[in-house]
Amino acid sequence: MSKKRTKKVKKVKKVSKTKKEVKKTNIILQKDEIKIFLPEKQIPDAWYNILPDLPVPFEPYIHPGTKKPLTPDDLAPIFPMALIQQELSPQRWIDIPGEIIDIYRLWRPSPLYRARKLEKVLQTPAKIYYKYEGVSPAGSHKPNTAIAQAYYNKKEGVKKLSTETGAGQWGSALSLAGALIGLEVEVYMVKVSYKQKPFRKSMIETWGAKVYASPTDRTEVGRKILAENPDSPGSLGIAISEAVEVAVKDQNTKYSLGSVLNHVLLHQTIVGLEAKKQMELAGDYPDVVIACCGGGSNLGGISFPFIYDKLTGKKPDLRTVAVEPTACPTLTRGLFGYDFGDTGQMTPLIKMFTLGHKFVPSGIHAGGLRYHGDSPLISLLCKHKIIEAVAYDQNPVFESAILFAKNEGIIPAPESAHAIKAAIDEAIKAKEEGKKKVILFNLSGHGHFDMIAYDDYLSGKLKDVPLSDEALKKGFKSMPQI
Image 1 (spheres, one colour):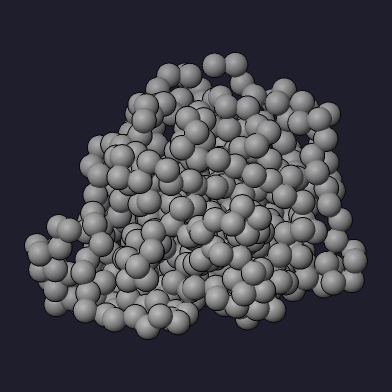
Image 2: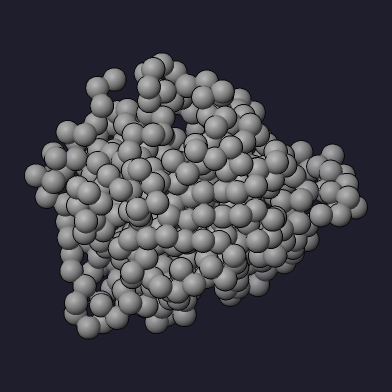
């Protein structure tokens, strides 16, 4: 990246310490505006770190072997030191390097839409806004952290990254980052999604990465899983184990995670920071912020800059809603406690809502929401009622997705469609109560590679697979005693 560009960004930082608040612009919006854009110079120059503002202290990660609090050195074999430092940083604002902003400019700032046609068909007094992250080259919000993680790894001399992916959006994003920054990438994609979404595989390979259907026979963890169940559909927990094993065994390889950890949610706050500026331009502030939630990066990204206002007393009545599938109801039915982030028990123990690290959810089409655990930050905020959670079956989610597509034009990813369902429910409730309400949700990606899911819904083949109490109890049995 050019030194000239980097210097320019640093110069902006000297006069932009108001990044904590919305910067004033001379943009004038019309009353019937649908899309709200920001100029490139309005890309936030720092990420928001929620750690200093939490209502209670953050629980430490626990070493899987010693069962003692994790140290930075313990994480060094799988993460670069810059990301380890961000993971538990006490700083509220962390500057975004100019080289990262240069790449962000390919698609950022992303647009904020007012869903006027959807409002009209619902006959609701509510205003519905959505931040559209599907404009990124990979088609989702995932490159926001993929670019950052690839950048910091490259700076520390790493040659290769290994990772997992559910629906393929994270694998696509990291492959893109590897191509743009110059790193090899190896992706372990959950087998059921690998079969459901063949063009995600093609996308990953187009950007030069290698992708394998997990569980594989390439790792000890994968071979063990296949020996126990040759027909295993895979899970994010299994794929994480395989990717971590690859990183641990090769000194030139580091592991990269697309959600859950603090530094990932940190990078995603660029979404919410932009949205705050755009909502200011629209003359509105959300009463409720909504996003789907698997590992938590999507929800944390859109909501944390707004939750800051709640935690500091500026907007005490703000609601934040996490939306998940009934097939994998981590926040709505999980237990809050320490658990492994992966099936093979190679990751640190994390205090979070979990269904048990050996839990394997049904093969629903929202592959990015098939994770047994959740972000420790999201879990903590949910535990303390800062965030609330709801869960939906597949069919009502796709019904909402099609209603949205027919009125707003965008075909959403199955994961994002969960947020649409919740936003529609909020709008209908506002109508029933006769109350005005401002709703903001994150449309985290498009569904152009998910048309098999839409085919199943339109042909009546889509099945709802809510989790049974028996399966729930079985999953809980795998939780360690800490």
